[in-house]
Amino acid sequence: MSEAPAPVLAVEGLVKLFGETPVLRGVDLAVGEHEVVCVIGASGSGKSTLMRCLNLLEQVDDGRVLLDGQDVTDPRADADAVRRRIGVVFQAYNLFPHMSVLDNVTLAPRVVHGLPRREAEERAMALLARVGLADKARDYPDRLSGGQQQRAAIVRAVLPGPRLLLLDEVTSALDPELVGEVLSLVRDLKGQGMTILMATHEMGFARQVADRVCFLDEGRVLEEGPPEQVLVDPREPRTRRFLARVI
Ligand code: ADP
Ligand code: MG
Image 1 (cartoon, rainbow, N blue to C red):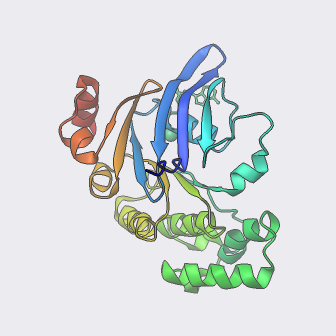
Image 2: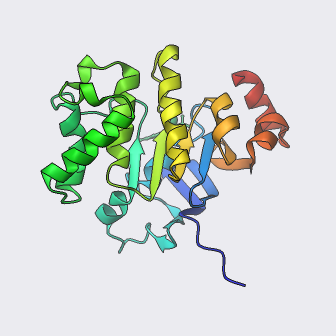
């Protein structure tokens, strides 16, 4: 029998303190290749801090983060090399306002990944066309709707071909009528085999698209499992109370 492949992402006992205050208290979770895992939880439960630790924007206080089996929290790990393997999109303000959409999308591939401009722009135009933004490529972000901006931000994150895409409440700042277009792009990315960890309050989306859902509660994964279990028939009373408030 062959050994199961290492998950793309494994988080083991992750602890993060802000001063004396523990914000992550031993988070365990894993994301396998081509999986979409949704992290749900109340505001302040630690979702963004978790995302920032995974992308090495925060130093962790204990535990490990393994990317393709490699401990990226090891101080000897090359943080820039790790970040090149992870695409990240936050809630808002993802695009540089003083650059065209095309420049926004091609900046990292050119500067960080060393792709020639021509090639970066060709790939960017193909991807922008696929998400319905080809005619916006030369515009500045303020000419785009919030939903278009987030779609461009997602294109920017996936263009370099990351192993893992981190999405932190990418629809939370959007007007309700713009949420669907962004979620449908995430769904397309899943269809293309992207591995995604996504903090979200969109329970309907999580139920339809996630392979697994993790309920983060006061800095711990209190419950995790298939969406039908966690979102419909949760074991933990705290999960049930949270869902009753948000659904
Ligand atoms: P979520 O994304 O689930 O809303 P966060 O990760 O943003 O939660 O925040 C978790 C907790 O950590 C909150 O209590 C928040 O106030 C605190 N926190 C987040 N960032 C910092 C920081 N840089 N310094 C101090 N406390 C922080
Ligand atoms: Mg957050």
